[in-house]
Length: 183
Image (cartoon, rainbow, N blue to C red; front, side):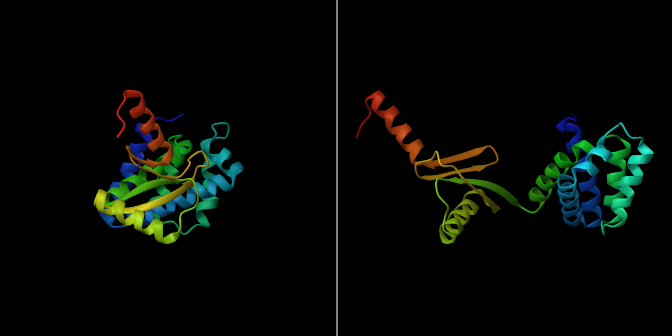
């Protein structure tokens, strides 16, 4: 298993090149596409990330796929370096960290919004706008449904958790009653 420190180093290296030549967003999209391709083609991924095959054999397989892609040469060369350095198994982590770097530069934050039931579009938009005011960043929301919530909403943005669920409110009320603080 490759450490997250190494994954971050590779992501930062490609991101630095992308910032210099102005193509960092395109490179990030290519990484995501490649990760998705690997997830959809498990045999391909097993071959290029396995040391059972020689580096030459793995490079031939990778090059055959890259020849059919429209990835920029920088991304193709980056993927070849990963293969050559036996870091291909970290491609998903590298892509994930690359997305974080892109978000930082673009003033974007990602919010995981957890609800008991699906949110209406207008309610989601109001919540997203409120979160943008709170964070001062553009918010990209990812919705998750959790049937264990009675109602309300839990929002996770990075390390921050905003728990407006009925479950949390009931727990708070329970604690207040235990301490004798009822109003």
